[in-house]
Amino acid sequence: MFSSIQDDLINQIARFGPITFSEFMETALYSHGQGYYSNIKYNDPSPDFFTSPTAHPAFGSLISLQLEEMWNLMEMPPVFTIVEVGAGNRLLANDILQYVKNLNPRFQKAIKYYCIDRSRKNHFSNRDQPVELDFPNNVIHWIESDHLPLTRLVGCIFSNELLDAMPVHRVTVHEGHLKELLVGYKDGRFVEIISDPSTIDLNARLEKEEIRLEEGQLAEICLSLEPWMKNISETLERGFVLTIDYGHPAELLYSSTKPYGTIRCYYNHTLSQNPYERVGFQDITAHVDFTAVMILGKQYGLKNDGFENQANFMNHLGLTTLIRGLRNLDIEQRKRDANRMGMLELSRMGGIGEFRVLAQSKGVNRQNITGFKGPSKTWSDRLKTLPIPLLTKEHLNLMQARYPHTAWNWEL
Image (cartoon, rainbow, N blue to C red; front, top):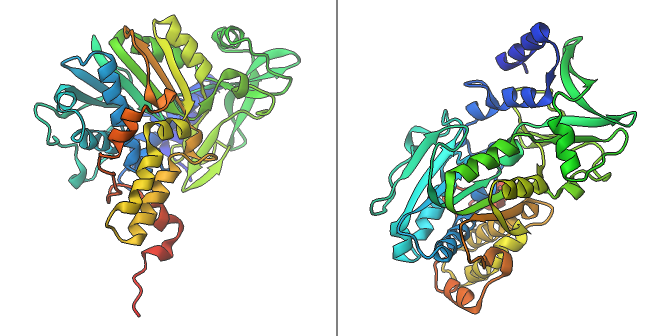
């Protein structure tokens, strides 16, 4: 499989010499009109990957409860701006806003919701265009941008599986010295070339986190995190930052238990560690260095309020209550089973339940965030009175995907 984007990379290397892996990854994923994320069709019922929002609307429903609590902690500002970065197909935005209709009407009235994404090309079918929801004075605003083009924001900036797709540099230790792996092209294929670091910032990041890699160990360093956190701090006047992604604290991310780094590629539901195949046609990710996110956040004026895995975060917000509530719904058994499987996936360890959730804040004095501290009796009692979100045609039916026979109509 050969793409024009691969031709561009080959020509660039031929003219200017080897490039950093960060440049390679940036081009492969985001090259305008050609990169993977420019051309992926999010409305495809069988994409290369699935995310928490596609697994079950309970994800967005519980996030909406967390956002409402953050609004309360901020003493209920009259305008609460929610900015979802890397919003993709708007499914999470719709799930959040639909469930908000069941919450405090003052919260619903306060919300302004922005979806920001680097590219909207092919994100929607004709019937799936972003539409104004049934909200007084509220609409989903769409912005195509690779940064946050907003200022003096009061509310919450959040992302789900955004940082793991930021371009990374690949490094190793050779004869006791930090080296960088550049990308060259030889004998009809991309090759890795050991070179001196392209920037002193690579050494500086590891030194700041007190990380020493072992001889021959491979690792990734995302230098894009610093301008990202700076952009967030400049955008956010008061409120929260909620980051959900797959990654680890630096001590674990760069430990000897990960000698080959964390590059992962996804294509047609298959996983590989070779980013040089199917260039432009496969997703490329690297695990997030949450220590860097926290250090940089503090450097730019953000406080760290909570750090937890997604399984605990979802369960603290009430996922188990929603699962138990399925038993009382008047729906057919296979729908109940499909919803239960989708909900359980949100907290499955060994899967997306192992994602990490980080909350940071600026200008907020009170932080008692239920997703990290666990629910109060008032929270739990209220949740039992709220409706249970159910799968729609926009979500992925994991039961049917994994066990196709459950969709058969049997005739006796």
